[in-house]
Image (cartoon, rainbow, N blue to C red; front, side, top):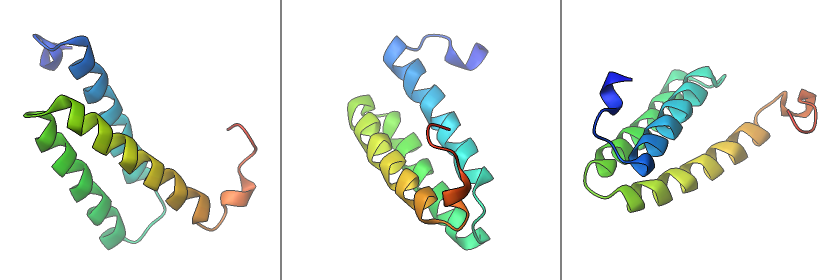
Length: 84
């Protein structure tokens, strides 16, 4: 991927995880305002990653935990098979 040129393996992994997180947020069945709030949190983490990769990794980990809790609390979460 051309955008990954010159990145360290840790930076590449962070970029991949950030892309995945953005995809997950876009796919959530939430009101637009709630989705925008989550997207703004991700943008802050993206900006942070330019200056402090380790801190960005920690913030992303925390964000993903919050996202998993949010997903498990949404209606219909009980319809998802264990392990999916």
